[in-house]
Length: 153
Image (cartoon, rainbow, N blue to C red):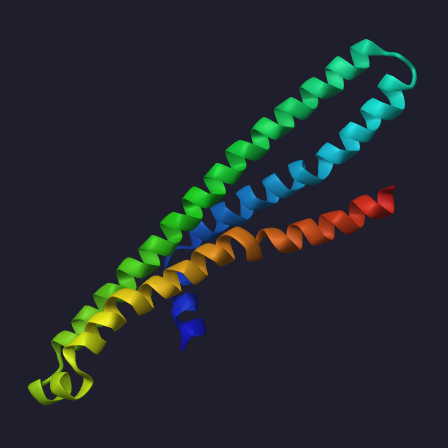
């Protein structure tokens, strides 16, 4: 049931999902490239005494860190927008469904239970989507990129 709901949401807001994936991917690439630049500063700048190379590579690192920050903010923004849009749609569906219940059905489920379903349960789905957008999308990028960076060393 949950996977069906999330699948419908992904089909409904594909551009938000693509934005999260793109920004998380860029962030992961920058995150993986920074240690390599740090090693280059030590190998080619500090050991040879090349101050110009240290400044140049340090500036590149600073630029990559800035790109990483911007992409992280954008990924969280689009992930939150996606989660909130899904939550809004779910609450609307729950409200419409509860509105069609007869008096007996409302009594059987109970008003407190129905309120919990339309607030807390939907919020839990929103948090799942937000965490998936933040962690579960970035993890494969970091894992695959980490393997490639390790093999390159």
